[in-house]
Structures are given as C-alpha cells and as structure tokens.
Image (cartoon, rainbow, N blue to C red; front, side, top):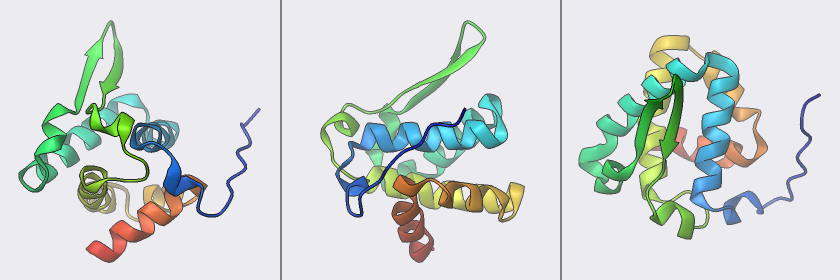
Length: 125
C-alpha cells in the first residue's frame, strides 16, 4: 500500500536537505532501480563537483550487495535544497533527459516535496 504524504505549501522548503536527497533517491529507485539510481546520482555529482565542492562528501557505494549513500554533514543542518543539491539536480536532469526522455523527470514531478525544487532546477538549465 503506498504511503500518503500531506504536504502543506511551503513546508517542503523547510525539510532538511538530507530528507530531500532521500526523497530523490527513493523516487528514482522506485522508477529505475537501485543500481541505475546509484550510477546516475554518482555521475551527476561528479559533473557538478567543479561548481560545488561540497559534493565530494557525497558517497554512494555498494555494501553487502546493496547500494547505500552518505550525504555531506551539511545536508543534515541545511533546510531546503542547498546549492550542492540544486547543482546535483541540474546535472541529474540532463542525465535523465538523455537516458529516459521525459519519463523520469515527470516521475520526479509527482513527488510533492521535490516539485518546486525540480522546477527551479529546470529554470537553471
């Protein structure tokens, strides 16, 4: 049974960056699977790294046949999408558009907490 989330307008911006990353990870895993999600997010982080050095602390690795991630410590202290997460999404949008067309981007738009963040990144392109 799917989980129902009630999002009050403006509340998503107050979520910790780590929670936003988890929503992004979960949405992509739901659509693409864990391996593809890990690969795409790793590539997006690598491409965004020159513009945002904070992403060097994002670790995505396979541990005991499962992929897991560790976000930078600042993601636990920051509310809303910080520059590092916005830059990651800009690169991720490009990779998703190349590999899935609009399918994955539309899927991300269905997550209420990501909707404004995803729209902001699309304006950055």
